[in-house]
Image: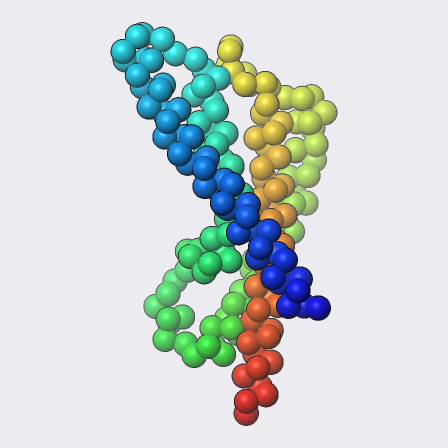
Length: 170
């Protein structure tokens, strides 16, 4: 059952990453359009510029869990790369339990009211002509911590299974 949960979480984040990967192309095209309009035609829209920021936030915040899944997150790799599979699994398990999960729980708890207040106001941009969706932008904070916690659970399961298999081989 644990393997099924882990695989479901991994598949969810893989699909999510495939969707948000298109956001980077959209950001590039929007940025190109913004530059052409501004410098070629002396025109600009705040909403278009803000949409690039929203897309960037989505790519970063929603892509973090997939980055963890494929083991491409930032890590001090000086010692880790020399560890055995068991050592890596133990490091990942302890890191997930003692660092990743507490930080994500803290982010969820501390930002819940912040995001809730934004939704209560249906907060919009302070810029004239900006997007009226700041509450959506702030929601990415909760989605970030939630999806990273979910992937943390998958990583805990993976590490536990590696350690169990290593224990059986002894």
